[in-house]
Image (cartoon, rainbow, N blue to C red; front, side, top):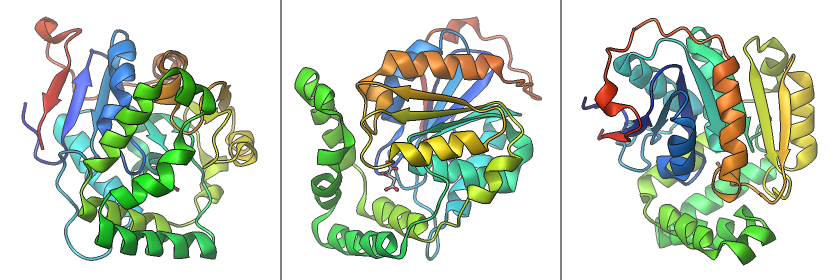
Length: 282
Ligand code: MLT
């Protein structure tokens, strides 16, 4: 079934679990979760606009609301009904915008290595400087700035192929997509006031060695969301879906199975596709 809104890959049947990647990646960071959680529920991993093979947002400066609205349009086109939404880092910023604008579509929420607060003034300045560097040098500028901070020492020593894989993912993103996302991150609002209003089952996950989202921020966020389950993954930094995929997959499976997800568009029986990955190009 071709999809014109966002490129995505899916696997499995049943409760929809939508995984949103962070910056500057694409849906392939979730390969292990597609494989491992797709046995129990329907896992869908889209590319955000301007990343992977999804077309970029049109018009002027991008906002988190634009990403959230495109995601809602995609979910409607795919016929997901209510679903469990999981956001990694910038994907979490998109999830907060989605919660503000399309809360009735969310049955459960996963926040992975992300924060609810906005950028500081210094942080914003850094985003615009990075955008200038990307205009000049392309994605290599982001690789140089971010790659040394994304993974734990343990991952670097024991799994150097993950370093190479992550670099490859970052290098294949477009300048246009990266710059739009930097603008959207710089101008995103403070989502912290939303936290205490969240009513769906929520999982908050941090990597024990994450240098990008410090543990106290994750702790406060988890403590503020009513009834949230909090987990910290040892041996992982900012990319637990690749560094400790089995651990994160188990947590996401629990979240999906524990969320009261009632797809309002029934899936046709499609036994041929169970346990097969299906890719839909945008
Ligand atoms: C991400 O992984 O999405 C980014 O590190 C988020 C950020 O830069 O704030």
